[in-house]
Length: 225
Image 1 (tube, rainbow, N blue to C red):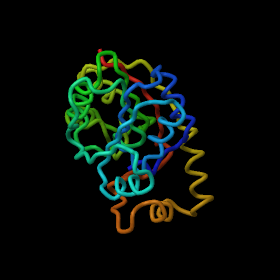
Image 2 (tube, rainbow, N blue to C red; image 1 turned 45 degrees about the horizontal axis):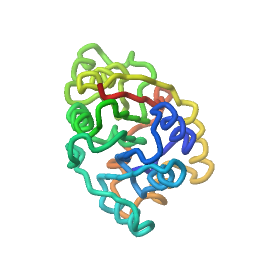
Image 3 (cartoon, rainbow, N blue to C red; image 1 turned 90 degrees about the vertical axis):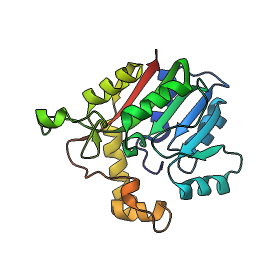
């Protein structure tokens, strides 16, 4: 899934810094796509990295490109790893594509070791005013509105799953820079997706957002308590 990654390695490095991971820590890259971030974490930091992704085509691409990568298929609802398997988990622009965020956070809590860190970078709504109070109460199974996370419901979901937020950083300028680069390189988002996704792939499975001035980008780190 990881075709859309504003900020590139800068945000990855910042996430690792905030998490305080050490060499040989076990890290799970969720929504790993073709495995580029996995390789970076292995080669640059010496982590023991596993990956999972919703797309069989992306997993196939990753393994063909680097047979050493350890990647498995996930269904978006659960994670089939033993309890306390990982020191940390990372999701780059993938969590918004999952159908049930509270349930998935509970699974993440179970597979992380006590004190384990979770890092998420994704899209969010800068100004929540378009969301009515009634709509704002409808996030028991999701923290999204129009494909964008809402900050307060997302933090509430984290807390309810047993995580404590330790960092939230706005990275919207990185998103703006990324969009500008896409338009320069490809001319449109449609052309970019066609070039980077497997032939015949449903774009909505990878991105289902209409970008506007209220679209922001964030990096958060939370700790399993």
